Length: 207
Image (cartoon, rainbow, N blue to C red; front, top):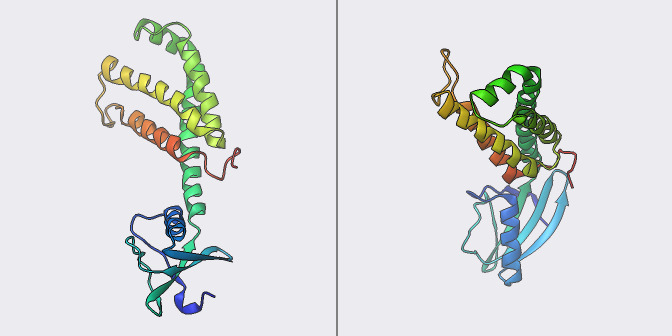
């Protein structure tokens, strides 16, 4: 049904394959278009027959059928790239957080004294933060409920940022002469991204 001439990659500005499919279904339900799904190895195919909708797809080629235009929308499976990106982000963030949590137990005596005397934090805060970071780092790396683990890590990083700014008077940017809180900011943003993105398909809890 979908010939070689109408096999065109779909590259609509700002529209993901999921968004396109949702719009196609909306148009189909309204009677403005009809979608003929077809599976091809490595691609998700669809033949859209209908009048030009307001959200005109930016396809490379089209065929004229009477007063209507026939589109063959070829959706390349981008989910694998998205999941790979999430996997890379999870591994990087998880390893960093795990390393910070492990360090808290390796330098337990010094950190426990500094946190209690200099920062005014209650006793046992170092151990609690260390456990949260170790468990959270492993969970994020393996992809186990990252959106629910990330908020706890953000709380720990916010406390670390508070210490860096108001206790150590650190600048934002790290330099060869001293560290700043830019890495803390980067981790917080990365954790927020994981809260929105989820674990991805390449994870232990992938559905």
